[in-house]
Length: 178
Ligand code: CO
Figure (cartoon, rainbow, N blue to C red):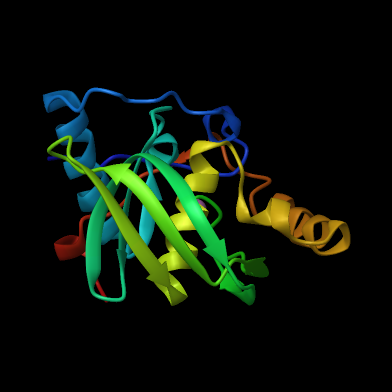
């Protein structure tokens, strides 16, 4: 497994509609392993493949004690509505309140290619929806009001005006100083 560089806001791959996987082979399993490793090192609760530059419908989630891969995920049911703060590993240090369905049922393939369904609420439901958004080229910023989005975007541009590219290396968890 390898730690992969994260693509940050501005990278075109984050706006791409990712392609279906259909067949879970060794390459997809390797991608799932790399996503878990990169998510853990970056201390995220979820990570989608296009955030590491791979536009395929693969994501991983680790929320509320449940850790799983989502391959070709589809949301089958939604219920209720709840607003909570979200962030994104591709938009570090930027947060906003996003309203989403409170309870969902998702269907996906796991890393063995087996189809499963999962019911989720709370942080897990939010993380799954956030990751599926990524696969469709949608960022949490898109759910905010125009005013709020413009405010956060201008802050982002100010803080990142000296960036030379759209990727960021993730430090291995063991190499951290904190
Ligand atoms: Co994200």
